[in-house]
Amino acid sequence: MAESQTTQRPIDDFLLGGPAVEPTPRWVRVRFGGVTVADSKRVLLLRQYGPGPQADDPFGLPTYYFPRDDVRVDLLERAAPDPREGDTARWTVRVGDRVAERAASMPLAPPPDRAALAGHLTFAWDQMDAWYEEEEEIFCHARDPYKRVDTIPSSRHVRVVVAGETVAETRRPTLLFETSLPTRYYLPPEDVRLDLLEPSDTTSRCPYKGIASYWSAKIGDRVARDVVWGYAEPIPECPKIRGLLCFFNERVDLYIDGERQPRPRTPWSEDDDGATSR
Image (cartoon, rainbow, N blue to C red):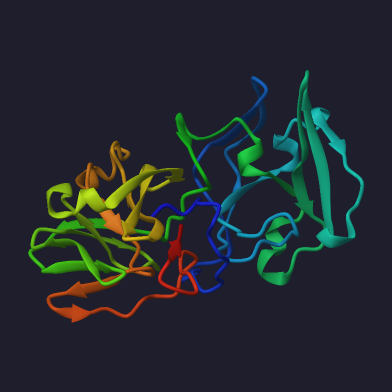
């Protein structure tokens, strides 16, 4: 799934196993305004899933923290304190005419499970121009070493029902197993009622899979918005889902081998079946 959609809802039960903070052997750099603002081979990885620690961080995801000595502090301007942010220092990043307001932060009194973050800074991911692990650019958030993604071809009978209408049915799905998320069923387009799908302007990035495009399902006058996604060009580590389509288990009636599956509760759940009138 594409974890970076802006419509995601916070959830706090994704962190499974492993410490909240740990050193990583990866060389990590952050670029902004044509300048490397942080460059370190001794970064700390914060593994977080759920509500972010600051008011402007509604959904926390894994990120990197840099020792202060490995940050271009000459490019930082201390920002005024904000009571909503608690014991967190903020800086604005300025490189020539480029400005990222309050984009750098450092915890002043981290809780015990995050004590190692003292004296370390991080950056608002989307406000920076690029992040790199070694020589590879990474997107959305830091990759969690405890997360695994497996894609396996199957002969299970998969049927997807939206608003009472069967919109997809196949016996040749590709199952994607991703740590802490529901099993996802990627289907050949030939086995999907494409006449019931409308392309969406929504896109999202996943650091484990790439850039996703979305479709809405239109059944009569009801629309299940952005209920289908697919990766036309997944990253090299995840080639088996190229060109396939996947429906949100959370928003459709999903039948596997004739048995209706319970709808999981995840950040992509909705209070109803995702269908709206228009």
